[in-house]
Image (tube, rainbow, N blue to C red; front, side):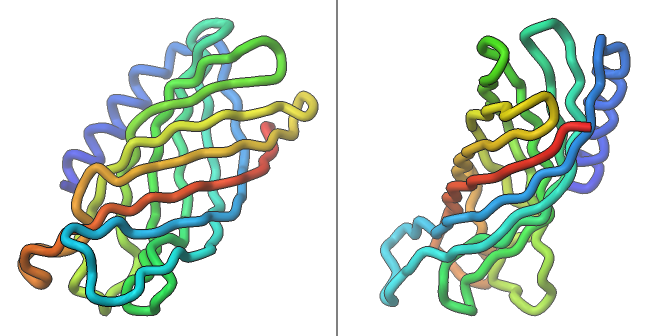
Length: 177
């Protein structure tokens, strides 16, 4: 897994090194997340309100298309302490600008768990991410995103046949430098 992550990062950096324009920035946001279990759990599963923050690099390929690579910390999972899930995430989004103010983004995301004592969770998870961004001015923006887990976040060796995917709605703001 580590070699796959490093390979993806290397490919992203070398592929986009010939970009027309590169911009950097930071963003922060609030999360509303929950776990989708299969089969349904025997306990009450409530959503968790959390936060996210990180930085990004946006590689302009054409005037209306770019690739954005991010590193962010995100507090996700469900409300109960034993099923909270905090991650370091790397979304890679293809961004399409719509006029001067809006951009749509879609792509994959790999996540690495950040807590040590919960063996029930997998170390790496994969998700799909999509969102919309609105530029307030040349530097400030707000955005809304959703990401849905494509892999089981539970460690099958510990949990058995229970599966869970993370679903998160994220509302953020940021600055492009």
